[in-house]
Length: 261
Ligand code: 13P
Image (cartoon, rainbow, N blue to C red; front, side, top):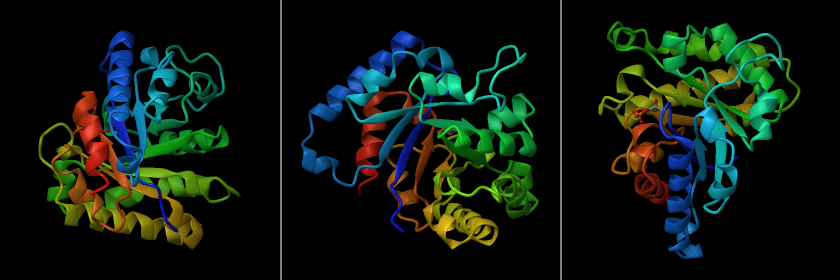
């Protein structure tokens, strides 16, 4: 099955609402300057903004055909969870995607594999596309524990989805080695492909061929315009989740373009 590539920007805790709209307008302008032919082969474009920047961002992003996503959500529909937001709340603002289990949330906000699995199920039930992040620490990599760590993170999510009749094929998994995030150090494309292939194999074992061939697997960690095409040349890598290099419209635009190479 042909999978549509995805270029997702994770803005983390950056940009006020005004700065976010400025980015979207700039991206729209850059996109309008190129011919329709140049867009052929473009990946699906997505920006995951802060909660405060979400209202009013969908419309300016639409001008560059870019989708809107959130960076987290709570698994409950509503309730006494001070400071949290639900799937329905982010959907109302135009989000079609949500990042779940980013390593920064696992690290600073103690999100467990079980919590991420629960949120994934809820996101799919609300017709949101979850981007589930997995990745090993430097210590785990050096101890040869990468594959077991990733398998445990992915396994928790797949177990939660095993009785799901449909929708699991919309799942996106982002492999982001923690030591490559914001460090300028990337996994080699070969190492990233080994992990991506193992993830797809695991999906196949748990959810079958049909889901495994549809699920999109992204690489994230110090991706920029200069190296994005390398990762996309690998068979099981279907796109990228980008932090720092997604903050400038020019750089995001160049990554979209270089994804077609
Ligand atoms: P950088 O692209 O800044 O390394 O961040 C990656 C990331 O954490 C995206 O979710």
